[in-house]
Image (cartoon, rainbow, N blue to C red; front, side, top):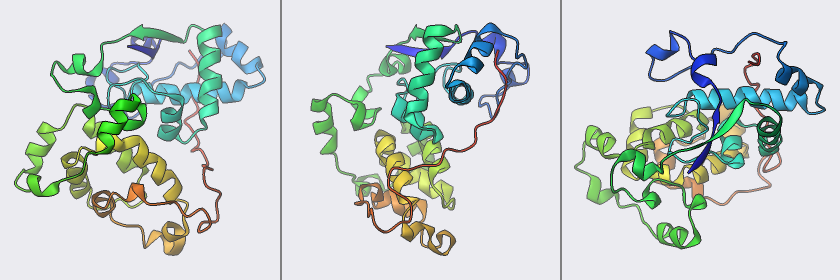
Length: 265
């Protein structure tokens, strides 16, 4: 499969300290402003959006496995929508920036990577690793019929569940935990998430959270009535119908977080 990657990641964005850690919490960004690509971007009518999005792409690539690639936790390439869900920035930003960066700079490149099942070296099917929304229609029909059956899993320990979870499931939980506004009982929430294989629904879950976080029920009294995350997951609350009149904000609107501003290579 083809995947976008940051060119020269190892030499430009890794330092001695970052090479010692398994998970990066920051990115080392060069401090030059005299490069031709940087100056060309700044002169572009959408230069601010393009460069801001570039910083977001660096941050996403820093947490990918392998680093430097625009990969999701499930091992598949990011889409414009998944990048938007991940960062809160509009999908149009990513479309504009990626088109420009691939056409007019040497900052991004396309690479050929093995499919997730090949990377894992197991017989795990692709259907068990990805959200239904990115599978072919026949696979969507098959996965939509799957029902959660916690009764058959009661005797499994948390360690067993974690070890048995597909590669990328824990990363998908991290995305959920980052997005969920009430951060209590993380261990219980993770146990539910992994036990039921909810990494396969991560995009649906994040889209639902994006809307429910703006609802009247979740914003009143400083979030007092937001369910515990484990309760929300157990109840499959991402499938709740969205009340488009209960909140003060328009559905679908989302204020992007201020990205870390750095400098271009």
